Image (tube, rainbow, N blue to C red; front, side, top):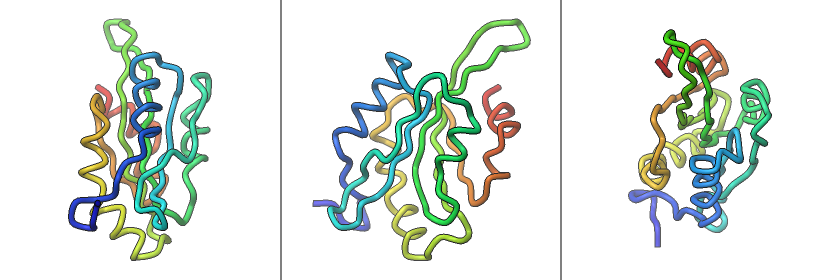
Length: 139
């Protein structure tokens, strides 16, 4: 069983939804949360493929930690359509210290379960994961 040193167990639905986002492009984003009572990471929100980055940012709670992935589409200077999958570790300043510690200690193990993430962002407030920063990190 998982402990704080190795991180939380990961619900199978997390991996399934991530594979759908990565392979089928059927989701724009996924928000994950740690359910402390059952000691595992679970899917909280799934964003439809037509939803925007603003919809994604709005789905993250203002005062609670979360993990999330976002499928970012962009066009290069050579006019080539590309996509990158971002992993976001959301840990707002206003969240509880215990929650920040739990998410921080479980992040690496959970992140390894999501094979195919290309860029990682850590954010403590919305300005640290603005669309401009995402665009900058995509190139």
